[in-house]
Image (cartoon, rainbow, N blue to C red; front, side):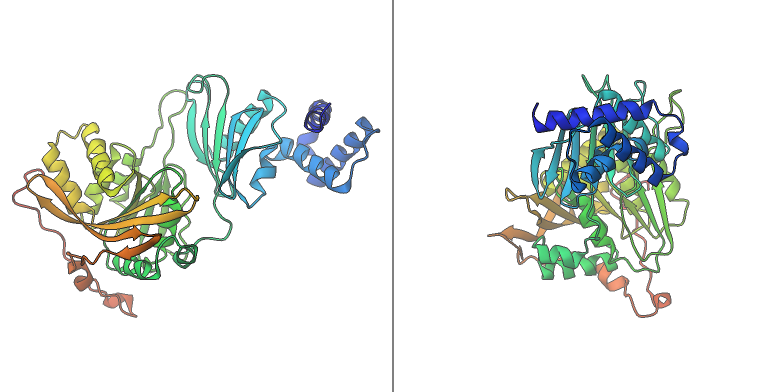
Amino acid sequence: MDATRNEQDILRRVRRELYLTEGLSEMEDEALKALIRKILMRQNPEEDFSPERLRQYTQTLYGNFRGLGVLEEYLGDDSISEVMVNAWDIIFVEQNGVVRRAEHTFSSEKELDDIIQRIVASAGREVNRANPIVDTRLPGGERVNVVLPPASIETPVVTIRRFPKNRITMQTLVEFGTLSEEAATFLEGLVKSKYNIFISGGTSSGKTTFLNALSDYIPKSERIITIEDSAELQLTGIANLVRLETRNSNTAGSGEITIRDLIRTSLRMRPERIIVGEVRGEEALDMLGAMNTGHDGSLSTGHANSCEDMLRRLETMVLQGGSGLPLNAVRRQIASSIDIIVHLGRLSTKRRVVLEITEIIGMEDEDIVLNRLYERREGALVPTGEQLTHTWKQEVYRYEDDPAKTVRARRREPDPEDPYFFF
């Protein structure tokens, strides 16, 4: 019997005995660990357990009953950024940017099912065959996606995205080479001058990390509302902060709270800025409306392959939302709401970088006009030589030492040529 199979057999036999032991739920943590060590030694008298191996087995078994089973091992490793459970006996991890198959797995599908229910219950969610897809988070802030059959064909699937323990700042990103010092200073000025900024990029391109870092430039005196599918933003130092989170419908099909619901209700909460973690669907129109109704300085993210692609995707989201607006009106709404797009990408070397920073100038005929300000050339993010066209926000918002002296921005006036400008 090979080492991995022997290890799985040892763990499986100890779990079976523990499941038959009464009073485990009332047992203190250290008492449970002592019991696990006792059973391990009694069941395997021929095994010469090293202290490290005994500790590892004990921690794994303890996690089965009090934690997240084998996931505890991977969540405790700071070099692992993603855990992908394809089946109870097939787990992949991304470690230091490289995806590999993990050695340790769950002992059975029942154990995986138990862990899934423990995860979703701890966040006040539920997942079952009637509601087989859920996005949630762990107490440590890790993002979790769960898909059960029949949405997944054969077995439950769990994907966990981890975030660095030490919060990444914009200065950290500069040191990593994600963007230049000059570009970071430029973005700082835009955030403080309340430009509406949209962060685009592909999967795992670092959008949430960049949004967190960018939010550090928001003046601490402002009232911020964050809206997310599963709360993962880590805004710090802002006292007047309200965090909102969506909720799936229950087994009866009621109680759902969508991003769209939260954006609409946030407008009644006197926000100075609204941060939407990610825009995926019909809520795009509400987000654009919020940006265009005096909530300058709002931030959001979305999946796209380029700045131009992000605009097309936003158009599609709004049109699919059943707003009834013609395409030209949708484009005018986008052009008058978003000021800047920051596009991120992941290089072949696994590095996450800013590929371009682009200004939305407005409309020309029926097309949105872009002004590329920074782009990546020969491995560096450099200015294109084009200047920021719309500078009025920099002139209107002047942050001084005393926030009370801040000059408030004028509200945008409706475009008389746009009959669909209704926000």
